[in-house]
Length: 130
Image: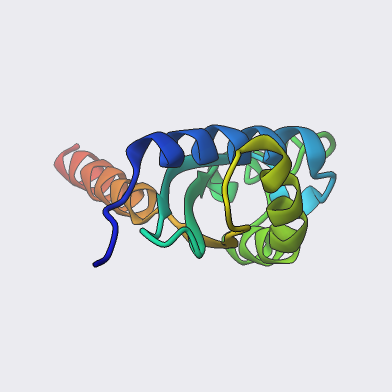
């Protein structure tokens, strides 16, 4: 019989992964990433981490920001997180007590993309009315 998902474990894993991304990763491709949700399979084999990041066009598109922080594009972030997954897996086992060491997978949160599209449509409507 399959076990149900455990919200307590998911909450612990979410908190741990978010902290590990911020404190343990020095990869510039993994800048400005926010963990939005975590799903742990009932057998604890796989942890799927949903994330979002800043829109590079909104921040990096400003010509006044020639120096300082540059927001990586979504493909760079995905590559950075994928390359960091084995390290995060090893660090996760030290933070959250689990019988198995789960595989860590990352998936971009579609909510952020959808909200950006809605924002753009609203902006287009407003400029069309003027």
